[in-house]
Length: 184
Image (tube, rainbow, N blue to C red; front, side):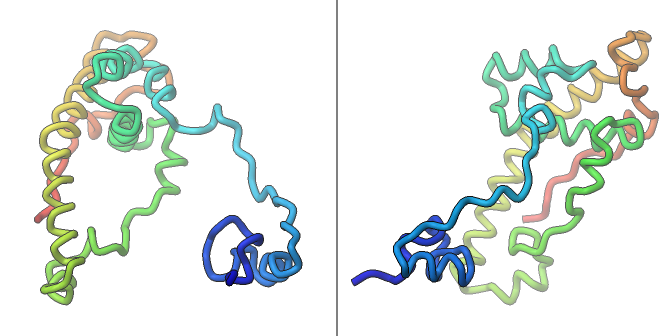
């Protein structure tokens, strides 16, 4: 016995995905034509290659990546941390401003909200995940981000044209408060 929507919309569940058209198309045996909603050139994506080609920190990112100290995902996260700390001078500011400032998942629940999960598998999973993330933050993100920010500050002090391309590092970014570890 089939589900009636197995040919319809690419496995998104609930009858084939593509709304009523996908459902009907699945029932009738045809597949809906793909629809391009948006197309973004790869050159606009923020990737590890973006970090490796950073005007001031590209060499540091390449060294971290080549040495296996960070993976591609961590390089992107570190780039975003560094650029957020640069504030107004960051060429990525419009992108960073568009990113959400808060999240509404159990990982970000307040202690009071976590109490509502006590005794469930989800509570235990969140506690474990928070501990793991705190460890990554303390062992990898904080030390590496501090090093990158110091490298950026040194390059700006040296008056390097590479360091000031895209703007100088504002004093607030160089003296920003420490990265914090989420409470477990």
